[in-house]
Image (cartoon, rainbow, N blue to C red; front, side, top):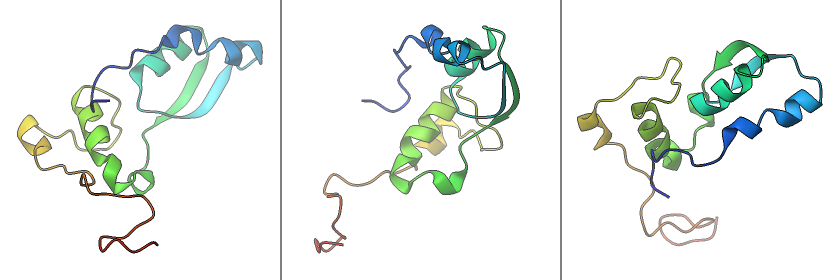
Length: 108
């Protein structure tokens, strides 16, 4: 998967379970996806507050994907929209990363 590539899922069907459950309003919608937001609101479900994903909940190695999505136009809330040049300085985890091990290779 390449960071920032447009989502290929068919979001128009996503609100169907919400409608089936009788959801008419969402007080806090935590998603950066305009496709999800548009699919939900186009069915008449009201979204009161739209929230971006809090920075403290974004793992360091996910910053690449989040920055690319914000640059591509995803909802950013209060996040800074980086320029193309600034994106070059966003770094994820290295290719030698192994989950559950520290940088020295010891199991954590």
